[in-house]
Length: 78
Image (cartoon, rainbow, N blue to C red; front, side, top):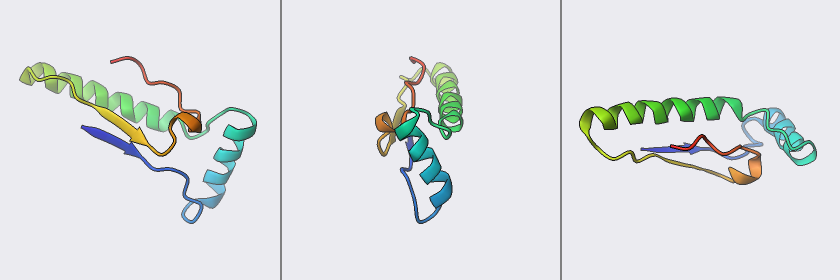
């Protein structure tokens, strides 16, 4: 399973993304982090349940444009 998040889209959400980028740059905070972190954890939890039922290895990859530079904290260990 692959979970992919988009990067900044000034043409689509200029105000929201611009403010979030500015806060990350100047304050080190990310107002957009809570939702993707919660979603990713939900997907990981569902994938764990599936792997236990089917006796398969857990295989989840999270990718995005500049996750590290967007102030997204590390996800909980699998």
